[in-house]
Image (cartoon, rainbow, N blue to C red; front, top):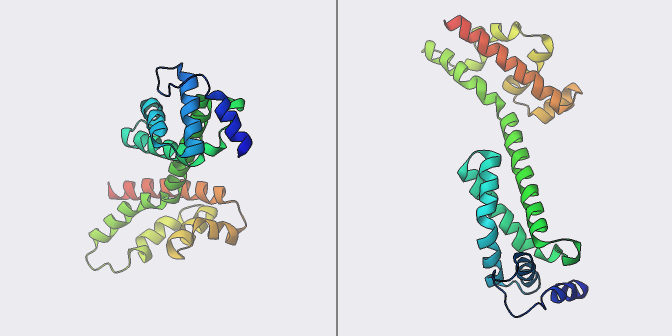
Length: 207
């Protein structure tokens, strides 16, 4: 920590100015060092003012969504505040370090979005099942509907296994993968294909 402070201090001797009137690279380095050493809120405000609009533009381009872009701004700059002590001026510019934090946060968000999409892929079939339920007022358990069972029986055996495991046995995709001794990715792909076929089959039947 002492060595880190000395490195930061050595970058801060350019003068007494601490705002963005200095050369931007030096000013940002000084501000980041102050956050690292002293949890300086004014220095952090300078970093926020400089980086927030740039991160937002990157987020909008990356996600195509302003709300997600703003989440990226918040996540990135929160990490900058928490992890500023990990910055070492002799290893690169402050901009490089902050943009690395931003990219990592962006990758994490994209992975989360992909994971959520795959984990909730089962929702794709619910509207179809609900249509079956609405068509029969006395229907008590639409998952056990003979019609749905007939649709599923037309699937390849491997796809039947994953549909029945997820819907009837209420197993998670991870549990099903372990039960069938196959990778989770295989479960996901089989489920996706099965749902596509079921949507097509139920759609054709309702036409």
